[in-house]
Image 1 (cartoon, rainbow, N blue to C red):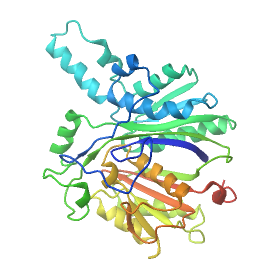
Image 2 (cartoon, rainbow, N blue to C red):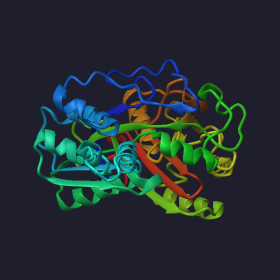
Image 3 (cartoon, rainbow, N blue to C red):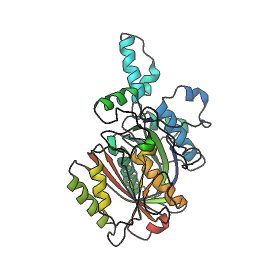
Length: 354
């Protein structure tokens, strides 16, 4: 479908500018907030006025597009990007009695602010789109890129996702039961499964094209579905695997979005049961936390595994640590939105299904 050439991930772990996943950075108050780098590529005057979601997105994107040809488009998936500044602006309306309001919070309160800011700084006037499909925003951003590459086979696109923890949304989701009320360390997230999980945030930016030369991984296929029916999820997965050569071709690694919430365990357990016992299984939400576009962290981790040839010890659930050509990612957002993504080494997949 498309080839990934370069990527940057700013997350709660040590993933940018250098990647070091030997040690797990612990959560605080059931939240995993991003570890922000020094933004050396962003002018200080602009950086000061940036909302946090915009700041981390620009910080991850600019190093990718500096020194390469101008991207033919910028596509970002998000659900809550800019929500913190949106709440600030709404509070100002009340605080100032609808008087003179600060324009900064308003300008950066919309979901398309990160993509727009990247375009403004890089002076890119090409296609610019923000996808806001909650738990499937990242997957739909990828689909948008796939369709654009069919229209423009020689193009190169900047694709990614961003979401942030806002106090407002965190409190609402906490009351709704999405997050745990008792404090739990992400180190022990899977030791005592119960209702709820921990909150997270992060950004992934990457350059993609149709060209295998110089790529680090290939997205071979993806599938999404909205349902709470476990049987329909399994049937969708079976059809997805069948069109990609299963059972003759079996992914060596399954990466799941398991997050310690017992309400979702039935989906992940059913998916694992479809595969042979010797398949390796990895998890990532104790590294990233749960957020709408958390599947992008799993996607980034899969590309790093294909690039480096091994799974970080802190991500492995069972199986071998090395020897992967094909990786299946399954993510489930709140039991309703499900996404499957099949990745592999570019050279391994270029001769298989196109």
